[in-house]
Length: 158
Image (cartoon, rainbow, N blue to C red; front, side, top):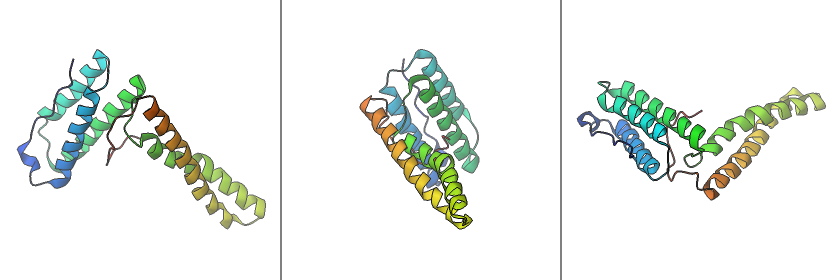
């Protein structure tokens, strides 16, 4: 079973950002077609694509709609098949590193030295830790052939 393609839209020619998002979504579909996905996943993806193909939205409303559908598809494929786009874990852990590691380390540094201004040092430390963890998880996904050969821009996957 194959994933349905996006229909060409005439109203994209004068909106370069929207054209880029549609092109990116089309590339995502091509990449997903190269992976072994279950039939229920393909049916779900086809339903999402059909909603995009039949929508009457335009402009920024269409942009948000397509990005939301793209995010939904990425989340489903990650959850069911552990397949992710390039730098998925890096982008996720960059933020998590600052929150999970950076803030507590900063608070400990500030409280330990009696200078709360040192608390800001925790954020770059957490950032570095998050980048290290995310990069390692992305490398592992690549080794296990669970990574799509596409780097999503403007993704709202968190």
